[in-house]
Every structure is written in C-alpha cells, then in structure tokens.
Image 1 (tube, rainbow, N blue to C red):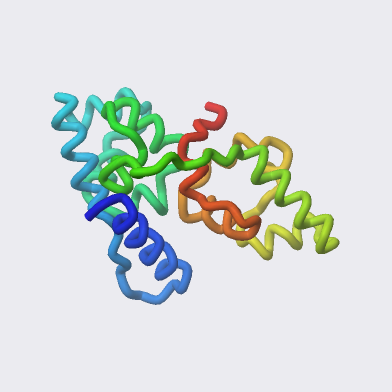
Image 2 (cartoon, rainbow, N blue to C red):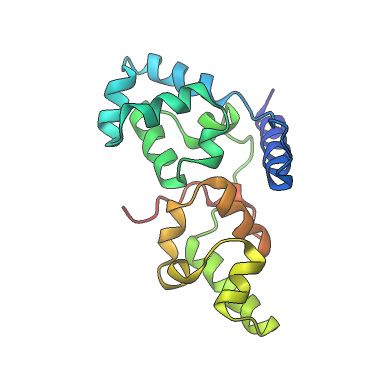
Length: 175
C-alpha cells in the first residue's frame, strides 16, 4: 500500500471511532513501523522511552496497538518520536512520504479560522467547543498547544474549519 491507501485506511478507522460502535477499527500497521524504525535505529524500547521522557509502557503501547498513534499520543510526541527513530511522522503513520508536496497549515491558521467561524455564526467559545467536541479555550489563547492533542481530536477541530489534519503534521508546537 502507498501513502494514499494508508491515509484512506486511517481516515476510515478514525471515522469508525467517531461512530463509537464497539467494533475495533483497522488502522494502518503503525505499531510494526514503530518497531521496525526502532530496530533500524539500533535502539531498545527503553532507550526510546528514555529519550522521549516517557515511561516505557507509553512506548510499548505504540509497538503493540496501531490506534495509539492516532488516539493517545499527541502530534508533538509523534514528531518527537520520529526524530528519535530517524523517520518522518508520515512514514510512521502512512508508511512513506506523500508523492506530492503537502501544504502546511499552521496552528495559528486553524485558530484564525475557528475565530472566523465563531464570529460568522455568532457562537461563544463554549458553543463552538460543543460543535467541535473539544474544549477550545486554551487553544484559542495559545494555538501552538494544538500540538498536544492526539490526531483523533485535532482532526475534529480541523474538520470544523475545513483544514486537512494531515497538513498540520509538520507543526511541532511548543514544548
């Protein structure tokens, strides 16, 4: 499978998760990619966890569950792990780089669009938070904090303002 097919698989799995039915969605084989990249970098799971400044169990889960990279770990942490493992976040999630140049949408642009949508629809922060499904207050104050969300939640915000979440994956955000 290539980038487009793996991305489609991720989108289907995330959409299935949105439905919250009890079936286990099928994500791309991200867990195996983490293990392969770690082995290629000559690192143990404990070494990766130490460099990541997280308990080993947080990293183990990434090599055990494909969904962890989408539902649990923040975008910022995925970028950090890609750096530790010497691969891109695109490789980890989709198996390869896109065959075309993806535009990058900044977190500031996402917040600008959120504010624009709120003004156009006369929505308060609380009302927009309900629409999106994520409490937005902190992110409206500091857009770079969006990097601390997992993909599944960032995707909801992006979808509400017409942004492709994949185009945000190279934004590291504040530590």
